[in-house]
Each structure stands twice: as structure tokens, then as C-alpha cells.
Amino acid sequence: MKKLFLFILTGLLAGSLYAQDANNEEAAKLKNAGNAAYKAKNYLEAFTNWEKYLKLVDFKDDVTVFNTAFVADKAKKYAEAEKYFDMSIKNNYKPASSYLGKANAQQDAKKFAEMIATLEAGIKACPGQSSKLETKYAMYFLKEGQKFQKANNITKAAENYQKIAQMSNKGYKSQGLLSLGSLYFNAGATILEKAAPLATSTKPSERQQYEAEKEKALTMFKKAQGFLVEGSGADPKNEDIKETLKQVQEAIATHSKK
Image (cartoon, rainbow, N blue to C red; front, side, top):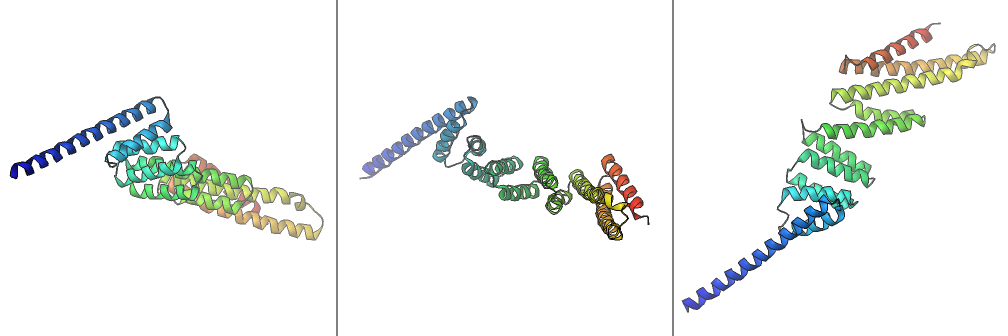
């Protein structure tokens, strides 16, 4: 009876080992197929093979999890890219790159609010390793600010530039403050340019209107001055800030005269 029991156990173990070997062999084939597809820049095929491989190994391959996320984004499978980059973040594998990859996938999917949240989380989670995350964050808000500025939407432009000005990175912070200073300086100059024909009018009502517009312009110049002074403090060597501040101060002095 004991011999029979031992034979049964041995048979079960042999069957288990055979199944495991077969599983390992299939996993190796899938991984190699994914590698070959990736080298050929066939990202969809690489994703398909690597995903099957990861399921066989219970996702216990941090490098391939990250690579699968990367090729998913390349193959325009953005939801899958987010999923695998999230796994990579959880694995703490190349965390800064994983956050950046997730943000890229969200941007490609036009999920901009989610992208910003990912960038902010990555910057917080990866101190000292987040330069690319910070660059992407700053460039997004710079482009958005410029878009609204061209459309003459001062409020929305300022909201976007403020995001850069509030960054802890001194370089980006000073650039955000310069953008705010330039925004309000240009807004004030535009007000004066439009009101210029009223300046020499002989009609008292039009002269009063000019004075009112001039006060609006001065308000804009003073806002600009505040941001530029703060920017100069953040980056004393920034020549663009110095030059713009000089122009703003001259405009304030000129138009403050009675």
C-alpha cells in the first residue's frame, strides 16, 4: 500500500514538472517572439506576445512589464499602456520613466487632466529624478498659456503660466514669472495703443476716456512689475527678466506723469 502511494505521488510530481517545463518553454517562445517583433518595430505584435508571456509567468518580470507598456503606447493601445505603466510604478521599476510613460500614453489618448495628475504624482514620488517630468509639465502649461494669449484671453493665459510659476524648480519658476510679466506688460501696451487716438482729442469726454484707459494700462504694468521682481529673485542672472522689468518700469514712469 505504501509503495502504491509513493508511486502515485511520484507520478503526480513528474506530471507537474512536465507541465511546468512545457509552460516555461511556451513562455520563452512568446518572450523571444516579442523581442523579435520589437526589433522589427512591429509594436502591436510585440505587445501581443509579451502580454501572453506575462500572463504565463504571472506578470513576474518587471523589465517586460515596462517594455510591454512602452510598445502598447506605440501600438496606440493607450488603456493597456496605462495599465502596464501602473504595474511598473507599483513594482517601483524605473519609477520616473514609468510615470513619464503613463503621462505620454494619457496625452496620446487626449486625457490631459489625467496626464497632469500623473505628472504631479511622478514629480512628488521621484525627487531628484523628475527632470523630464518637470519639463513635460512646464511645456504643457507654457503652450496652453501661449495659445490663450494669442486668443487675447488674458485670464486663461495667466492661469496656465501660474502653474509654471508655482513649480519648485527655480528655472521653470522664473520662466513662468517672466511669462506672466510679459503677458501683463503686453496687455497694458495693447490698451494704450488702442486708446492712443483719444490722447490728443479736443473733446473732454474722449480725454476722460483716455485717462481711464491709461489707468487700466498702468494696472497691467504694475502687475507685470510684481511678477518680474519675483522672477528676478528666483533667478537673478536671467537677462530676459532684467530687460523686461526695465521696460515695464520705464512704461510705469512715463504714464504715471500727470
